[in-house]
Length: 290
Ligand SMILES: C[S@@+](CC[C@H](N)C(=O)[O-])C[C@H]1O[C@@H](n2cnc3c(N)ncnc32)[C@H](O)[C@@H]1O
Image (cartoon, rainbow, N blue to C red; front, top):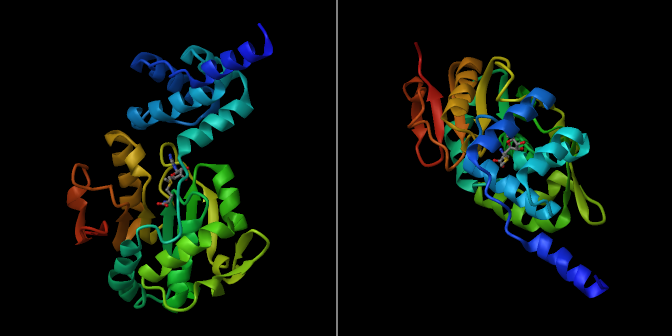
């Protein structure tokens, strides 16, 4: 094959639509990943897993799902790539500003009556949501009374969260969302600028503990007044959603608040009767007594 033909052939491999992944093969892959690495994706939404795996097939130029399975099981580094693919760590600061506004209106007044409080933020990804929360509590003058446990099962994302360094190019969007979320002062007071990145202020990190926790395999966390778990349950099937909601229910103290993502609901869950609705649109719920 000449050079040009080789290049064309290469492109064809990369551009070819990846094969369909039959349910049985997907199930076997998930079982083997669990056995070998202890990460349990068996109760994630198959539609979303399939999309991610097909994308990886395409990027790696692998035609056959069996080959991808073999490579994943043989090669730890490749598995780390798959883990990142399946985690979906998309996040923003003050994502869905209306949620943070509602949190100020409904949850903060209750927190102000407590001498101290704990918040568990599950699925914190690279930390943008955690710093948003810390900024909000700081503005309300109650950050020092609070402890935020920010957890995720993705160690790479957590490492980035601990560093608190974000690209400058995103700051304009984050600042706009901060103001739409009811933020008052200049957003720039919460970070220091470097060349093409910003470093979140150390004072925000003082009361944050970032740690690993897997909602599919780990248990109850610690008694907290608030659980925030946004845009995570959407990737789980009903069984895993119920597992996570059970852990949240048990972790919450009396009349604790549960905050979910914009596309997540308690409606179909077996826990719908354990919580009352505080704000329907912004997905803020409160644990019922008894
Ligand atoms: C789309 S991000 C949401 C981030 C943030 N909560 C937000 O709304 O912007 C989903 C996060 O959930 C985490 N996640 C997925 N499955 C998890 C599990 N079983 N246990 C803990 N975290 C999980 C992923 O690693 C990812 O960081």
